[in-house]
Amino acid sequence: MMMHDLTHNDDCELDGPLLFGRVLDGRGGAREIGWEAARAWKPSVPGEMLWVHLCRTEPGARDWLMEHCAISAPTAQLLTSDATRPRAFREDGALVATLRGINFNPGAEPEDMVSMQVWCDGTRLVTLRRAPLQTPRDTRDELDAGQGPVDAGSLITSLTKHLVGRMGNVILDLDDAIDALEEREIDCADKAMLAEISRIRRECLQLKRYMSPQHEALENISRDAPEWFEPHDRREIAETIDRLRRYLDDLDITTQSALVLQDDVRARLLERNARTQSQLAIVATIFLPLNFIAGLLGMNVEGLPDAKDPAAFWEVLAICAAITAVQLLIFRKLRWSGS
Image 1 (tube, one colour):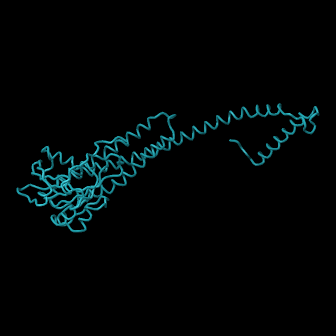
Image 2 (cartoon, rainbow, N blue to C red; image 1 turned 45 degrees about the vertical axis):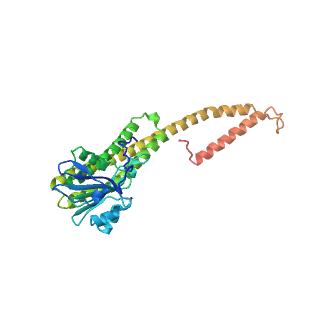
């Protein structure tokens, strides 16, 4: 499968648990901030908000969440744990969510998925991940270009939009793979083709298994987000939910297409095997009498009873005919049919 936009390695220069930090100016831009400054950050002008992207496996991440963000211990544990099933809920005016994205890291399968934890209270947004994930960097690049989100709600909708949007690339690849297999000639159907179809079906099922809970999590964000999540943010995330729903429908269609194609290929293989066996049966039918005649005429009866009897050959022939007749009677009695 073709991979789109392999994830950049963002583990090169960690500043504590911080992968990168930005302070949004409320106008679509942002300035960079380091870990020490982020730990003591407070808004200096109206409209400012802090966004830090952390590696949750690095020391200090959980302590900072509990001490500086006043996050409860169970929630801090959830944000830094490997519990990656998508979910979203509201807690004391803050939004807590776990989302999943396609795994584009080298050597990984897309259906493995990569989780991203999110916590936001309207003025601070914390995203955490374990494996490299490109989605936060897409939004960061928009901010650095001065064309990014302006507040907490639009920042979350930007992240979810990029996260879900990248799923479309993999689903499109699966659709293209099925289309290419359907266009193959009938004579090309083989076990390798069946294995490829099985792989596509397996990937579709695994992706749907992981994406379905994400659909529910995004609906929870749209429905139960705190007051700082504005109506236009709800509309934006509703469009993302609709796109995710279309992706799930596409996965269903691709799965059904793969199933139909798999049945068709199996039927082709069975038909080909039956045709081959029929041809072999015809060849055997042609050569069996010839072999019988050759064996009969090539008998060396010297030393056998009646070997010197001129009628011995005809006696053997009569015995063979009698045995054949008895066999035919037995087959007829047993209602045997060669068809």
